[in-house]
Length: 291
Length: 234
Image 1 (cartoon, rainbow over the protein chains, first blue to last red):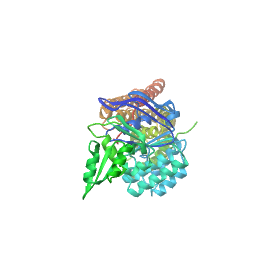
Image 2 (cartoon, helix red, strand yellow; image 1 turned 135 degrees about the vertical axis):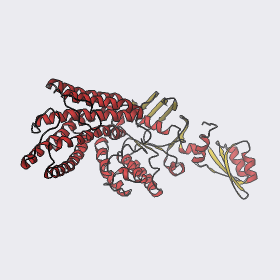
Image 3 (cartoon, helix red, strand yellow; image 1 turned 45 degrees about the horizontal axis):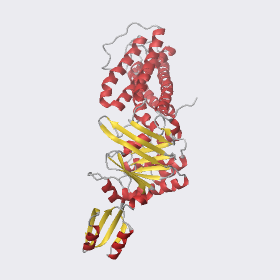
Image 4 (cartoon, each protein chain N blue to C red; image 1 turned 180 degrees about the horizontal axis):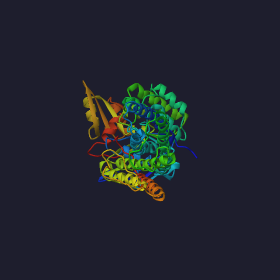
């Protein structure tokens, strides 16, 4: 589903959570939504899923307004840590209601996922561990096969093997049933390989919206003898550096042109990609920066 | 007509609860009877609990089921329709269970020779007047469930401030339903100062009961029609 957001504002009383967001997300991709705590990620996803009405601006999904529009909302799934879709009775009860309420529900897949995540369907969800409750949300999110599926930090409770299982299932099911997926996360390095595009928001505004590779190309790591690295990076925007003996690695923000790359090679410096997390930290630094 | 799973699930759960509660009340009744201390209908006393259960169902409809419906892509309007169907059919279902309990009790009391007397004013004068027993409890549950939904909606949306208004409003709905029936409320610690000793006319009873039912649901709808889902667990 195609998402168009224009000058979107959301206020909670005196607090402005979304401050004029404009964004277009094409259908059939996996998007990463990154932002610091309180940046507005959950608010944005909540508006997209019609969990709440926006204060001002325009939100369209497949060209139609979202709030209280059953033709649109029935095709959207937002799974949050709050657990709205799973805090009803036992695991079986969760599937019972999802089957009625979700038009594309795949019950067989849901039961297979329960086996994979080792969920006892007879157990009351509120009595499950944090990880099991997270897994229940993921099961509902994946088996709903909603054309717009969003996960808002809903897998933080999972341990590392369970998270890997989630990523594998997400990719496999996305390949089999292409749809638009948005994942909000703080586990940037762990999940970023899944993203085709990345949206970074900060203080209720979009500070970056790029294809993943294009975003990563905005930063370069420069590694080599410390003196040469310092000389090369003088005047550049250095995000951070690490030293090991005489060797230093500096992370530089900004694309290098051919002349700079030749100069680096001549100086015996090695250029490499920067970690997305480092870029994220830079873009959401409190002194403010925008792409 | 499509039967919402909301109704089926609540109905099945209520049936299980009733079976257990009926067994408990029967055991206690037999115990009091054998001890020679049984002077009136046990279900007249026991029926206090189902009305609190009805209130709980109303609260749970909003607190538990509404967020699930919206999170599954249903609109608030569609949830309201499913909720209306559920409440409209669940109230008579509960009333039927209580009526059945009175009927089974009358059989037990008849066999044992115990007096199935009533201790307060009702729409019925004998527990065997089953249509009137059903009518009284139907009107009662049709007030308690919307009152619970109203309180649940006010608390979900406005938290504690909502309850400050919703509890008196819900209590007013409940009192009005008893007044319409001319029936004395039997709620421990509450409404004990109230007494409606004049039975209402059938017209007052029906219109009053229906009015309370509709008023409760309309007030609830006014709160949930554009209600945002909370971002955090309550």
